[in-house]
Image 1 (cartoon, helix red, strand yellow):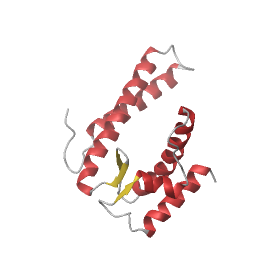
Image 2 (cartoon, helix red, strand yellow; image 1 turned 135 degrees about the vertical axis):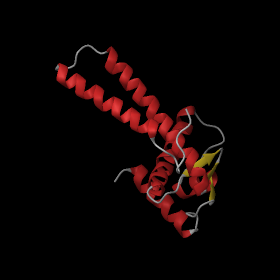
Image 3 (cartoon, helix red, strand yellow; image 1 turned 180 degrees about the horizontal axis):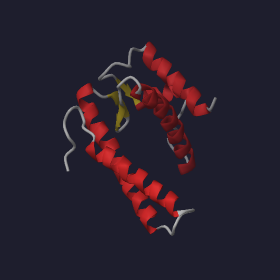
Image 4 (cartoon, helix red, strand yellow; image 1 turned 90 degrees about the vertical axis):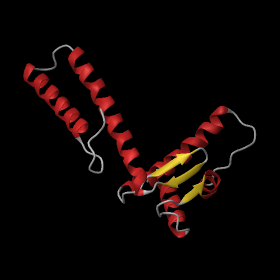
Length: 149
C-alpha cells in the first residue's frame, strides 16, 4: 500500500471518529497535518515545504475520492477543508464538466493535427469517439438544469 493511501486512510478514520464526514463539516489544515504527522518548520528549503504539501495533498485526495462515492466533496479554502453541502455540489459538477470539455477539445485539436494514425479506419474511430464524448459532456444536465453555454 502506498504511503499516500495509508495516510489517507488514517485521515479518513480520524475524520470518522471525530464525526467530520457530514455535510458542512470543517477540518483545519493544522489538524490534517497533525493526523498525518507532518510538521512544518518555520524556516526550511522550498523542497521541504513541497514534500510536506505533496504528502498532505495525497492524503486529502484519497479522502476526497472516497467521499465522492458518497455524494460528498471535500473542498479547500485556504488552510481549511470543508465537506460541501449538497446544494454546492452543482458547482463542483460544472467545474468537472468544464475541465472534461477542455481536455476533449485539446484531444480533438491534436487528433485533427496529427498525421494519419495507423489506418484511416482507426483515425475515423478515434475521431468519432472524441466527438461523441464531447457531445455527451456538453449535453449533460446538472441537477435537472441544462448546462449554460
